[in-house]
Length: 417
Image (cartoon, rainbow, N blue to C red):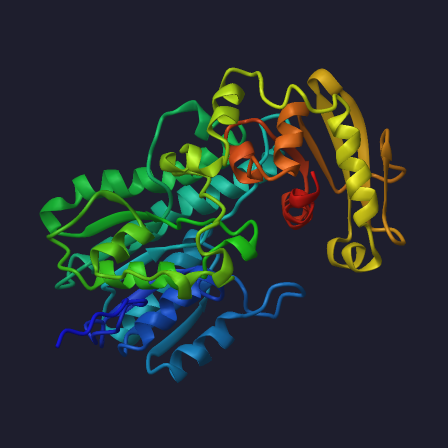
């Protein structure tokens, strides 16, 4: 008798027992998930992160992470580290080597993000992203390399996207793209530079971004993918750009349901901002609509009423309630271009909420700008917000996280438009 089953997670093998892993940004999120996965093998984890005191909005510190790592069976060494500070990085690495005897693996996970256009990007934001993402990755790798050379199976893994010179990856957030591609260039360059030392370098990108957790995957998918990589012989693979899902499929994982934040949406994930395959028409339900959007026109729905934008806001008005206002707590301004040009607002911060033509009475938390045809396609479910953003059809200024909260409202309106 043959029994078939779906493999749904990466099983720990014990290969990382006694190995020392230096992880930046390991107090929460992906970094901590990688640490906990390795801790199950009995690895030594250096938690290099800034958060020593509890953050008012974000859970976890280097000390709470250390406790969880110890509970999983690993050994933890929490270090207060700002990867922009060379003295702090050098001190953390030297102290880790003194405690554990060396460093075998480096995970450059610490990162800063601001998805803003050139004119909207303050230089302090530009400096922050490039100093943490690119410079921090270079600095941590540089300081750790002398110790990695002494390891029997050394690895450097950068959490960054595949390199691509297509303008679409730069046009909406050039400063952020420069900083993340800088991390990827470190992986590519150091792989060639260090090939004689057999130090494995790779850049990994999570398939689903964090913008909307209901349509994203858990950090554990990255933890499992990184675990699979760093368990391999460093001579077998280097200088590559890899995707978490592809890594796990190669390891025999066939069921990704458990990785979804919401299992019901496991096949409706927000596409990653930096994966070219996510520009496939599968992200836009109507292929003809997609082709027309590429041409800047839309010949569909010619028999529908011309006042489609007004129709959207009429439906939104009927859907407003106190619960929606309390969950969203944001004010939006919509600058609609094209055939039905105009300015609209949506107040989901005051009372039971309100909509109307013109600018809101208060400063909006987020301003969305797009053509009227694309606007209707997005609110009627034919165009995903992330896809619209990637293709440059949607421009967002202000609070991106609050802008993404609109996706739940769009999903609710889909059947009514």
